[in-house]
Length: 510
Image (cartoon, rainbow, N blue to C red; front, side, top):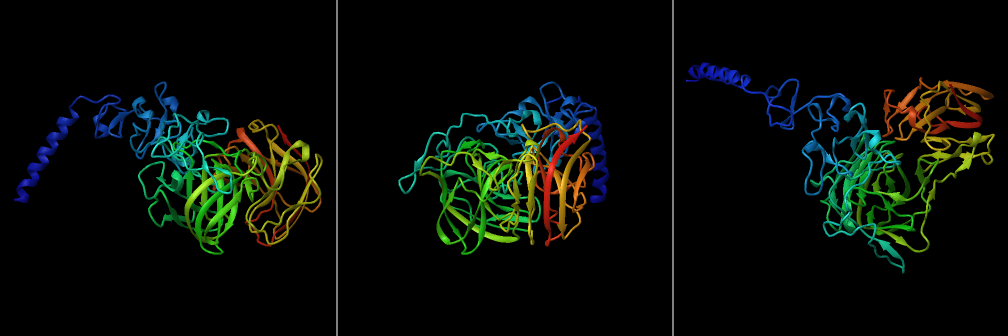
């Protein structure tokens, strides 16, 4: 019977194929199943015919070019906007500006004209002055939460405090040690995460690399419990978005972060307050089940270290310490911000900001808790001098903000500086540029031990990093938006490194 049916089936299938191929082709926006259903050169994606593209210049006016799972297409107007009542079609997610965007963990998930910010792809022209997506929507409370901007709950000890908050659905912003480009959700279907202690939106976050994070229990209104692990120079844990969609909240009027938590005795974790790639962090050593109070005005470190953090934040991270290969177990049952005095105001990163060579504002850029860097005298406009002692288990450097904000170096050929550098443990030191997205290009000049004029070709870096701190192929660095320069040690080359570095001039040459 099977032998008789197969030829018949083949004939019918061939007939159907002829019939389908002879049918009228479908125009842009029409329903489809196969590419062949659409008028050439349209492609069938997300069940509709779309124009294919490389950039938005290939699309009709007003449409953007977006990557999907199987094609790069011109997003239809009906697919572009979203709200709590009108979610996006998969694979797009609803971003904080209420636009349907391609989710990402790195720039490779985006088109060539886009960057990955707050876990979604966007064109640089769409970002606000803080290089974040603008916020849309009314900010009305949902799910029983309160509006962070206007409501507060009482704190202990006679102070006032800010409790949890929520808003309309959207994409939450990830942040872990200033290096995370977006968290992944576990334990819930909402792109905002699950409502946890005090009605914040909680998500798993794990930096791309050798790190893991899983919920121990499902997030509830009274508990968020994560188990995370990481190798050196990675991070993992959980974060609470202060609003949903993720929006910036002014915390400068508050003095303390207070949370009730269970952290095994002696276990060290990091608690960070973030706004995208900007933020500050505190180290916490577990005392079992207890109340933990962190002074907002006195973080252990901030990123970048050469600028003020105005305490305009969108999320709070609990997890592994970036420089520690370790496992952590953290349960949070309460999270709030308290006012006991006049508020923390803007926070200046540890290491201080002082005028250095040629008027740059410079500070000590150190990572990890075993910091050894120190100034030799105060920085002046004609000299900056710092030293480290071994072991240096993480980067240590002088970091200087480019005067007047980001600078366009695309028309420049070289960077030139005068420096006296002595090292042990390696024969080279590190000079680096960082762009506004926190990507870096690094150069490795040879330490001479005498005052030397170094001239480095800007277009020929020795190593490149993306915004997540991963070594990548060079080419994605934005020389038109350079925000910081650093002089430091090659910590990855030797754990016994010592560096004595004095810089007396710095200039960019055309």
